[in-house]
Length: 227
Ligand code: NAD
Image (cartoon, rainbow, N blue to C red; front, side, top):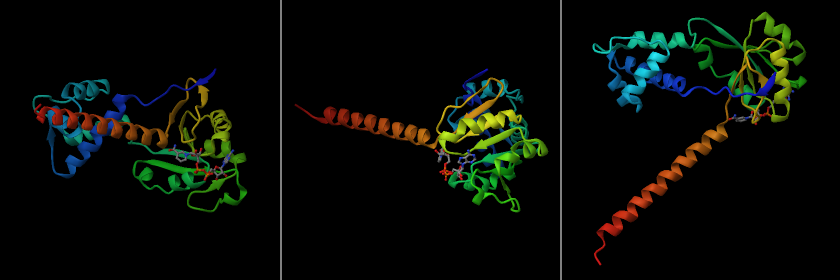
């Protein structure tokens, strides 16, 4: 049955990204052992929360003697299945799709965009580093490369139809850039990425911060005033 997808990335998983980034930086600085309170200083997450997150993802370690940085990074990489390659397809080779298809960090992380698709025949190029196919070849290519995850970068109006077609071919995970809430079966994971929402959340916090700073300044001003 189709429904509005509710899959959002859990906060604990987002924190694992944060820990991994921080640990990777420490590894570069030559740090070998780390305690949860050190990781807490680096990430702003409480040591209790860090231990809870580690336990949720089965990350164990010697709390007294500290955690081994390399071991922690390895365990985090395993959470994201970094030990194997993941083939991806991308639909919509416009401004965003073309930029994403050229982003080489995906490859470094074993995520390979093996094929892209576009409705526009002028954009279809089979003989290219990352081929751009017509949608009529969606199933054939997805089957050939055993693709399970797709990126949608088509206009809002086309996104649901593309999602339906992808799901029919066996796609189980979608990263959706189109500003639309996709309806998908319960066993399909959808992660909506919306830069406008991200920007609005930063704007919200910046304004809140400014409001609270000016309230503090006023308070200081009144405190210093003698009647
Ligand atoms: P664009 O118009 O440059 O590119 C869209 C591409 O999709 C075009 O190449 C077009 O030919 C192709 N297309 C259209 N219908 C199609 C279909 N049915 N099947 C296959 N291909 C199809 O647009 P853009 O700026 O690259 O944006 C793409 C999408 O991403 C839009 O939905 C936009 O709103 C969204 N977007 C999201 C973010 C974000 O942060 N989430 C940022 C920018 C853009």
